[in-house]
Length: 264
Ligand SMILES: Nc1ncnc2c1ncn2[C@@H]1O[C@H](COP(=O)(O)OP(=O)(O)OP(=O)(O)O)[C@@H](O)[C@H]1O
Image (cartoon, rainbow, N blue to C red; front, side, top):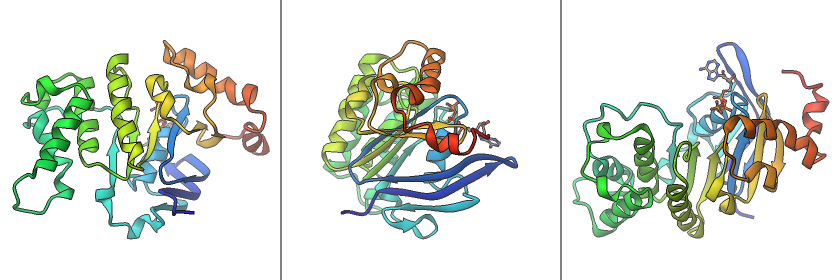
């Protein structure tokens, strides 16, 4: 069996003196598409940020491609798209420049962009539906469009592992479909994808496995279940489904939490 792309063993995280993740054991196989689902505040972002080494664990171990995070150096194999923030605003760079920065780790220094670089950049810009805005300054774009620029930057790097935190929040269904197609291209090449989502929409067909977080623990880890992956119209309604669904649809799911007496 090949080395998993990500493993978290007995992982725990505290933030602000408060436990945010506990007892996390996850192994994401190469080529797998894992959706991380769960209600607001359940720990989804913290989990993927921990996988990326952006949040320290207070217990346990994280490995990328078999290497402990502290020793991992192959970051050009990894793409990460953080949750939408205003981080990109004020960046005096065009869409094309920001997306091209995703190729830097694949290029040799002082060598002009090769055709493969240019194609990867233009393909990624097209995949997020921003072909008409390639010359525009990132700061002139809406928050959703800036998020798509960050997704394109990650796609342009053709990573072996792509981790995305709510990439399609607020993105219209047609753009989600285009994005799903771009991800599929990566998956066909053997990439591993970890995707935080409130609702999967067109991405649902890609997902092999769903992880549902609840109160900083893994409440469900298994095949995607329709109740989790069906597109939904409101987040609140969907959260209600997630809170209920593991117990209702997959009897084994509640047990880890029950053993802990549902303690927070
Ligand atoms: N820097 C921090 N300091 C203290 N607590 C934090 C910090 N970051 C997150 N938390 C807390 O950790 C918990 C998990 O947050 P996290 O953002 O991982 O959840 P989430 O499932 O991604 O939520 P959302 O769906 O709203 O993005 C929340 O209770 C949050 O308030």
